[in-house]
Amino acid sequence: MKKKLFFIIQIGIILFAANGFYSCNDTVTGSGDELRGVSVVPNPMTVGQTVSISGPNFMDATTIIFPGNVSVTNFTKVGDFQLNAIVPAGAASEGQISVSLPGGEFIIPIDVTILSTRNITATSMDVNPATGNYWVGPNDNLTVRGEGLGPIVEIVLPGDLSVKSMDFAKKTDASIEIIIPMGGFDRNAVEPLKMISQNGEVFYTANKLDWSGEGYVPPELLLLCGRTFKVWTWDDRVVAFGNGGYNGNTGPTWWAPGVSQFNGTGHGVGAKMAFYLPNKMVLTLTDGNVYTGKFSTDMTKSVGTWSSGKLMIVAGDDPLSIIGGTWGSYNGSYNLYPKVFDIINLTNSDMTLAFQLPEEPTTANFYLYRVVEDEGEGSGVSE
Image (cartoon, rainbow, N blue to C red; front, side, top):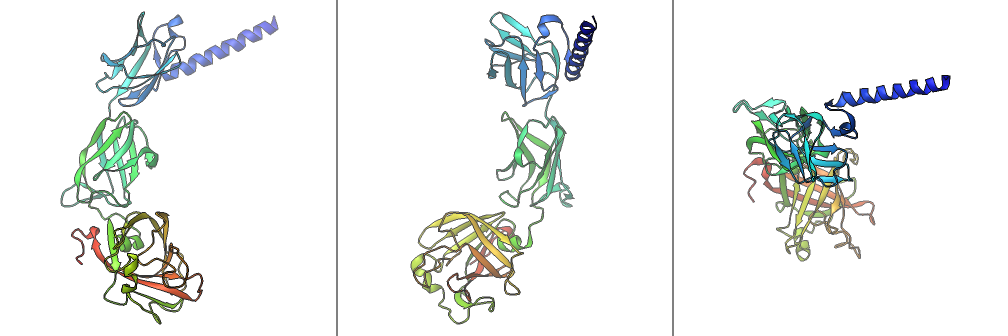
């Protein structure tokens, strides 16, 4: 008798706990067999969000009908007992979901709440005094606020640059936080922010953003790329290439052949290299070849007072290097493309790079450049 009583008490506790957990998630109406295995997750749900509906047997289901009599026929069956569907636009805010089956309509005995994505605004730290719009730029924090933001999976910036959900700094149903990328968007735009839900529905903020904000760009990238991109070419006002003692000189010294030495390699006068925020590089040679890839800078890797840091080519086409970066063209049988350079000098309009020759530890090649186009300045720099 005691053992039986113990089992009865155990079963009672389990049933009580299960009922408690179940009723915390949904408002349930109905009883008996019609509740067995039935669930709607999540609840509340948001327009554009995926909802999973479980029931007794949905193998032959043809239609899901949401509150407001909005039908969905494009859904996914998971086994015989679960249907996954996107909550449709136009669904009523409250009610019950039903499933059309060959034998009739099965009403899910759970009251559901459906939220619409609405009342969306975007804010930043600064306001443009001229327009009154929020002012954003590279690396600024941007917060989108609203209701039912759960299904938003992409935020599209002017110029069709986008930030995907995996790169959101933070996301809740009421807010999304992102960090504005350093480049690629239209800085002249003043417009609402565009957002896309997981079912492709497009939403816009109720307010406009001014994208011409200064933001924050690391100093070395600001000099190298401007606020969008810069194009550099040989500095033909001075000797554009030469050799000198490594970690002892700041420019060409005992050998200075000039740019004419590169005419046969495509690296001569007219060759250009462009650096885009945040890390894109494009090399255009005089022979029509174009190479692309990525770069990085590290201003902690200086060599005494001789250099201020490193410019490194980290990905892309194998021949990608700086203009003139064909190690071996002048020093023997080597045929490699240098990828790491010392930054000897870098200003808003002039740059000197050096490549320390591995086979000559005390010698470096020097390369001198000037800016010919600066998109960040608006009108560019004329050649």
